[in-house]
Image (cartoon, rainbow, N blue to C red):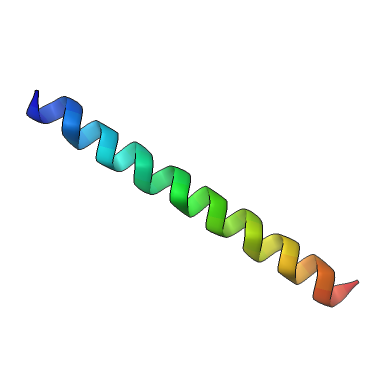
Length: 33
């Protein structure tokens, strides 16, 4: 059970990073364009 919770936390962190990265790239493209 502990391992499942740990995996869920890691997955949530990765999804948050991906979302932030997507927003950053969109902002960069907008400023460059």
